[in-house]
Image: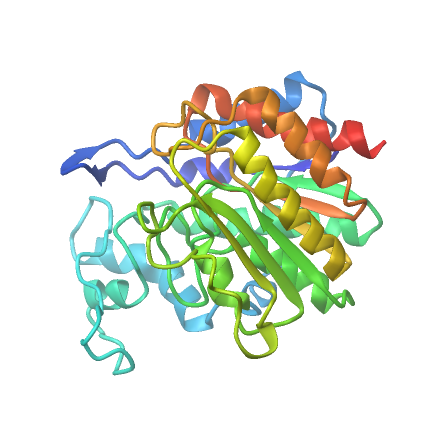
Length: 346
């Protein structure tokens, strides 16, 4: 299996996040991708290549160009104001505030307009890391356009919390959605996105909720008690042309393989019935039992079985890296999914 990877991810390194009332180092750190890459190499998964540059057009097919322009220029504006610390939003347009009014021109106001939380710090190198992460995903997708049945985009920062014009949850550009749209633009009639990250892919749901050409299935912590809280319930089924093509599987804290795999089985049956031309897997492995910010109880061998079940769909499958914060185990768990897939697909 081809892996696409860029060292540019190290340019994004948020210094702190607020957890339980305390500032502490960010869980989303460069060593995450480094650990996965080391495991890819040690297991001889396949060739590792650097990304090509596909420019802004495929990103703009998913994200508002004004939002992308803001991301690109935010740090320069912050530095010009004399700041050196991370740029983090402090104000948000909450309920009963004006939602569709003019976008503020002050940097902090504009940042709040494009954010849904404080968990996407912008640093001096964030834009280059974010842009390269999207190009990693697009290069992996291009490999499949040329005939490969599978590929792995080792993306960092992750992307599934980013929506059409908002960032949050460590995410800025929704890599999985960008490549799903690329498949469609290149002739696919239908694409399925399977999100196995512990946290609901609220950005991905927002992007495709009213569309029937992308089926979205997400297995995640119950939003009544788990981040990102405000999307991910089972009754969210899509709207308009998208009605019936959004499938959420909210699960309780403490869920292990038996309960989790039952949700995967149902999601895979729905994907098979949808008969997509390609599957994009938002590959988060923060479902691991020792993940520091998650509450499921999957163990490392379970990820092999996860890959095997996805392979049983018999569909071209593109894996895009998302979450996973037990850094010492993230490489084993992510590569187990890929090896389980490859072993069953042969």
